[in-house]
Length: 307
Image 1 (cartoon, rainbow, N blue to C red):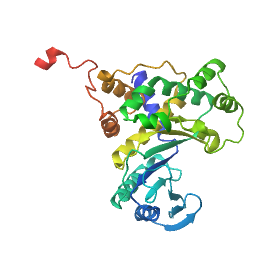
Image 2 (image 1 turned 135 degrees about the horizontal axis):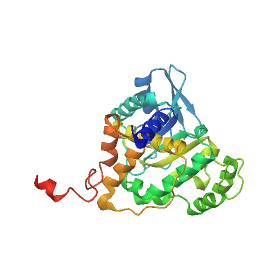
Image 3 (image 1 turned 180 degrees about the vertical axis):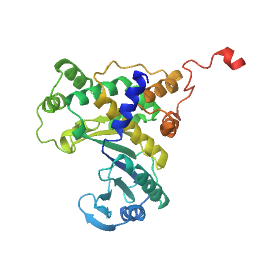
């Protein structure tokens, strides 16, 4: 077995051990209806918890709480529901997919005001792993954003690029603790981060690490397609696993070449361990919007075309 195959297998094993959570923003459906759609999959009981987000909860038989919450940023101010999962494990993905289907069947829709946010368990990341993840993300950010079809307005507001000042600080200072990383992120030691701190509006949101103990990926455009939701989760987990397992990372920002983007992104997916039949559907969805060939960087050689 080659070194690259061994690394891919290790990363695949690691990604399946990272706990995660997801937030899916929807419109066209009342929160009570969304909570009952969730109940149709997981069972349990539904209750109105209320509060500032007018939250409806589905308490599953295993004790985990699924939520449908109000989100004032969405285009439909009356009928909207942000579906918020409890802490999930890799084996929960199929249940989540059934919930996505149930919510869609109940009448939920998405538009450009909606997004999907995926949270990775911050307890799995030390300062070195967070630094590697930031560098990896910065290097591939243009390609990832292009592949996932992130619209310009979202990228300019709710999921901005890596802060280059932050990147410069961590490359210069090489923080060895999360406290030192905190100072690099905020510019000072922020012991009690405010939930709506403006630094949260990054595609790679590290504010969540100190505010709620997670690393948040905010860039995903909302969909109610169960297969695409699964592919987004697998991509997020694979990026996290790569950061955890790697020894180093390069932050040099690559230039996006749209003509070769499909090939380039496929290479990245394979390097993240999304290899083989198990991840065939994930590759299909993640590469689906890109033009060109996934197998040939500059097109199939003419002699093979003739053959």
